[in-house]
Image (cartoon, rainbow, N blue to C red):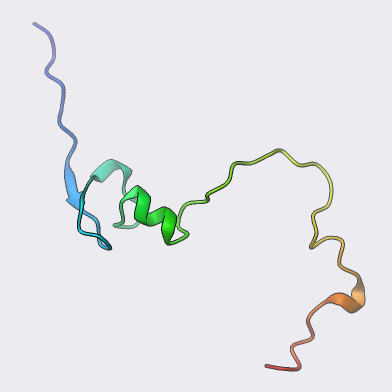
Length: 68
């Protein structure tokens, strides 16, 4: 009569080996590990209009790469 709920597939995280839902994995990592590895942004878009700090750099403030 009622459809049976489907159980999501679980896979092991490549970093911590804990089971994680396969549809929420990021490049083989669970959500927590993906966040710690920097694969998922940790901040939300604040909708800033206008320049950011990198846009405010002057011509002489840029890295010229002399130390590389």
